[in-house]
Image 1 (cartoon, rainbow, N blue to C red):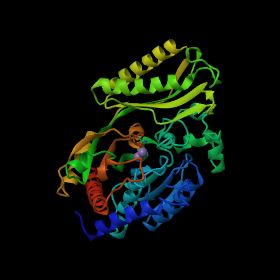
Image 2 (image 1 turned 135 degrees about the vertical axis):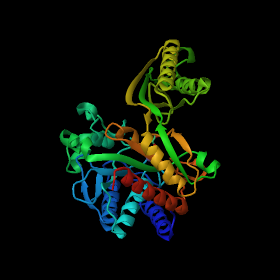
Image 3 (image 1 turned 180 degrees about the vertical axis):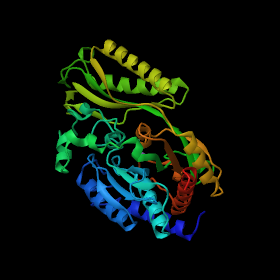
Image 4 (image 1 turned 90 degrees about the vertical axis):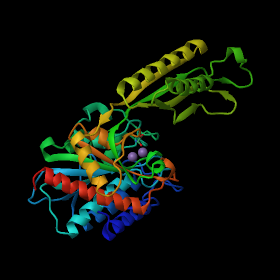
Length: 420
Ligand code: HGY
Ligand code: MN
Ligand code: MN
C-alpha cells in the first residue's frame, strides 16, 4: 500500500529523472538528447550506478553497455526478476520516457534493502543503452543483445549521421561488436521482466487513473526510404522537365498519411526525419532520404498497411520518373505480455485502490524484445496530456509513489507465486 516511504520514493524517482535531464547527462546544449554510447550516456550511467549501489545493489556493465544492478535473493545466485527500461532518449526529449522505469526499479530495491527483505529470487535493475534508435537507424540493440536475439551482422555497416559505426562507438567504451552477444542471458537465469513506463498516451489521464496494466505492445516496422531524382538549376530547369526528388518525396509522405487515415483501424504511420540533398536554395533536389515508421496492434494490420504504402511509393516513382527505394531496417512483431504476470500486476494495482485498466501500448519498449527471453509485464504510469517525446512530458511524484507501492506489491505476489 501507499505510504510515506513510497511517496518519498516516488518523489526521489522523479527528482532523479529531472537531475538526469540536463548537462552533463544530455548531449545537447539545449534540452535533452542522450544518445547510446555518448558522453551523456556514460555520465548518466555513472550516476545511476552510484544510486544503485546506495540502494544495496552490486553493479556491472555488460558486453552491450547496459548497466545492471543486482540485489540477491534469500540465497546467492538465484534466478532474477529483471526490472528495467532505457537510459537513451529521442532528440529534444522528455525526462521520464525510459529513466522513470529505471528509477522506480531502484526505489523498489532500496525499499526491500531498507527492510532487510529478501525474496526467493534475485532482483536486477537494468538500464538499457539503446531503445530509441535515436543515434543509429535501428533500435533496441542492447535489449536484443540481452535477449540473445541480436543477429551477428545486425551491427554491420550501421553508422550514425557522423559516420561513426556501432563498432567504433562500442570500442570507445572499451567494448567490442564481436563480443556484444556475450550480454545474452540464459533463460534459466531470469524469471521475468517488468518494465514501468509512462503511458505516453491520454487514456489513463482521461479516465482518472494513476496506473495501467499493459496487455501487449504494438507491432512496428521501420524503413529508410531513398528518393532519387535529378539535381538541376532552379532557374533554368523548366517545370515539365524536372525530376524533383523533394516534390516526389512530399507526395510519398502524403501517401503515408492517407493510407493510415483510410485504414480506419489502429494503423499509424509516420515520417519523422527527412534529409534533402544537395540542400541548396537554387538547386532542384536530386536526392531525398526519409524515415518511415508503421505500427498496429496486430502484425497483419501493420503489414497490410506497409504494403499499401510501398505500392503507392511505386506509383509516385512511375508517375514522376524518379527512383523510390524503401529498405526495411527494423521489424518488431506485436508482443503480448504474460497472462499470469498481467493478472498479478492487476491485483497489485487493485491493492492500491485503483481499477486495473488493461491497455495496449502503441509505443515500443524493450519489453517487446525481452519477451524472447522470459515472460514480460508492463506497468503504465499516467503522464500529463499523454504528451511524450517532447520536453513538456510530465509525470507526478504522487503517481510515481503509487507505482512503487504497486511494484512492491507485485514483487511480493510473485514471491508467493514462487513459494517463498
Ligand atoms: O518508438 C517508440 O515507440 C519508442 O519510444 N522507442
Ligand atoms: Mn520509452
Ligand atoms: Mn520513447
